[in-house]
Length: 244
Image 1 (cartoon, rainbow, N blue to C red):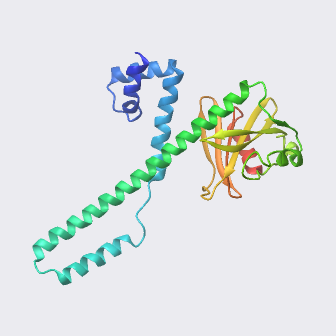
Image 2: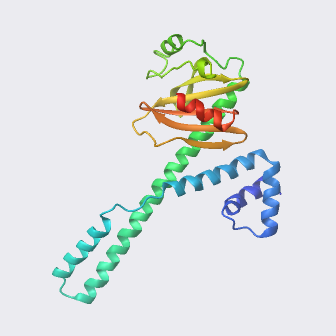
Image 3: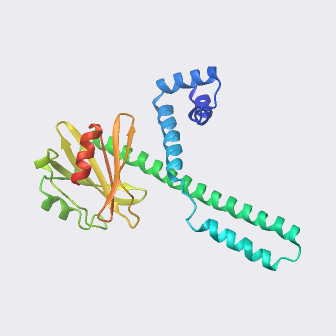
């Protein structure tokens, strides 16, 4: 099976909609093709984000609809016609609410998938660069001022040598046309990139993704979004996140 054919089947594969022969051929191809495996993982991540993005209707919505229906009863001159129109209106309202929720969830999942790809690409790129660090220092009082004038916010810089995560330095990255801070930590021989930028929409809790052998964590704290990436195990990545 070629990549072009496999990519047409990935969505159906993730949704368990393929026949046995097609499923076997698609799985065998994905296991041998990193690019298609990446795409399949993206489809799974999007599905998970959409599921997490589902929201129940507001608490008082049912009562508001019921009250509106009762008001219509009082002014309706042709009960059968009004009843039909009333339920049509309720149905249209419910469909609109569902469509808006789905659109919001899909947009959020697409943005999350985009960020995940860009952050992971920046991490891998830094590992093969000759100069992955633009300011080399373990002193937070040296690294933090270096960002002045290079980005439009003051990043939180902590040296966590005491906890086994020594600060190595930092650099500026470009994400979606914006300059962000990247701090570099180490844990034994593992390199950890921590990317951050300010936000007015903090997220609740930390989210973990395992992508192509890397552990990715994202969370918010002190009006900033954080993304940490490394091949370090998930437990130790979680320990770093708590200390940052």
